Length: 101
Image (cartoon, rainbow, N blue to C red; front, top):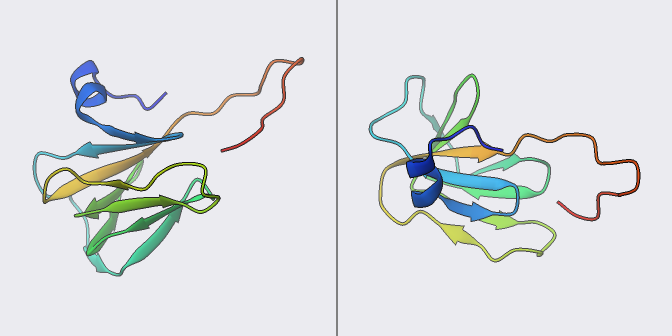
C-alpha cells in the first residue's frame, strides 16, 4: 500500500490510509516554513517545516490530524524528518463501495 520495507512498516505510525515513516537524514529540497499541509484530502499535517518531494511530503517533527474525526491524531515518535505516505488506491470491487477515508 505504501511501498515501504517491512522494517519501515513495522516502525511507522499509521492513521487510516496515511503512514508516517522516520527518515534517516534531511531530505533533498527546499525547506518551506509553514505549519500545515493537507494530504489525501482528509489529513492535516502540522509540522515546523515541509519539503515536497517527487513522491512524498516530508515533514519536520510532524503531527497528523484526520479532518473527519474518524482517526485519533498521530505524532512523530521522535524528533526529525518523517515522510508522510499516502496508500495506493485502487478501484473497489463492483459489489463494494468506499465508505470513508
